[in-house]
Amino acid sequence: MCTAISFNSKDHYFGRTLDLEYHYNESVVITPRSYCFDFSNGNRLCNHYAIIGMATVVNDYPLYYEATNEKGLSMAGLNFPHNAQYFPVSEDKENIAPFEFIPFVLSQFESVDEATQRIKDINLADIDFSEEFRNSPLHWIISDREKSITVECTCDGIEIFGNPNGVLTNNPPFEWQMKNLSRYMRKIFSRPDPYVLNEENPGMLSKGLEFFGLPGDFSSPSRFVKTVFVKNNSHCGESENESVTLFFHILGCVSTPSGFIRVEGDKQYKTVYTSCCNTDKGIFYYTTYGNSQISAVDMHKENLDSDSLTVFPLITEQQINRIN
Image (tube, rainbow, N blue to C red):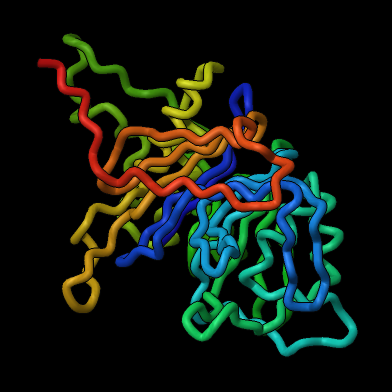
């Protein structure tokens, strides 16, 4: 039940919510330019763009959930069960495992257009990272300042869709989500004049009723519609604080409180973290379920010419500014 968005104010921002009932020891991870990626197809890449994002590090390898490279290209993988399909290794195409798809794209390309051309020629091969970390069924959003695309690998192979709203959630497939969105287009893009409340005109029950009928549940189709609506009808100043604050408010509209969605056993499904990266400046912001204070990691304050990962464990305990 994750949600990802691409957002422009003065700078470009990219991020997502991760909604799960468990943790994988997520951390903010910087992969510097000289870290060696050993791809499962036998290729080795030791000179590439630096990357920052949220990842689980296993055997010194960053399994990225979402990330941004130093050129401003960003990518996130979201859950796509029952639809995602990966294929056997092909001798006719460049084989890339799903777990290395984000590093493959962000290590080499500066723009969505560059990535699109290369992705058309790859095979997403059904190669697991390990016995413990098997492939997750995913689809992906890739964004730069100018545009976004959605990449899905189904029984029909790799498909690339233009994503004009810069929003992605989980199932159903992206084409279905866009068709469903068309039911709400008038509310989202043709905002009616509000019915003003005042002493002479007290008849309206509440401000905001001009948007009555937009979905409010936590399903993926509803979150997709609601996120597009909130993103397109929000006002943002140009300062960094205003932009970051609004970004977290947009994703806050679809964040999941613990216990709201039932899962088996005693695990609690919730929004584990929310991220926001200023892709122009390389600053990665995040909050966690237990800590609503925004934390920030600046990739350019680290040695990007190193060959070793830099890992920042998440601050998960609530940080409260006590006034008295």
